Length: 116
Image 1 (cartoon, rainbow, N blue to C red):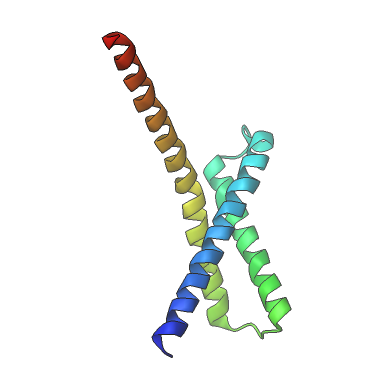
Image 2: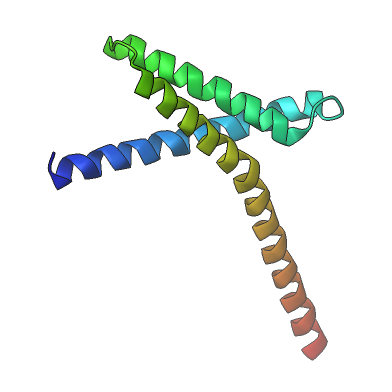
């Protein structure tokens, strides 16, 4: 296996993980409004990540006609954990970043008004 093949595999895996994380975030945001007082959001994200990743794995093996090996199942579970963690903590950190940014912008605006 040469470096080009490794780069292609890693890029594809990162793209799949990003896509699954975005899909998980969207599904969790939609379902969260319904189940807000019934189930913790992080648990919901965890469950949704495993369902989305498992479905993506099933679609991949069905389309490609691949026989399932044990390492594929272990890899799918590992990817599901990574997607769940990214979905749980990534969205919260993004929201925190946006709030900090708007807070900084508001403070700068007040400072400019104060100087005028």
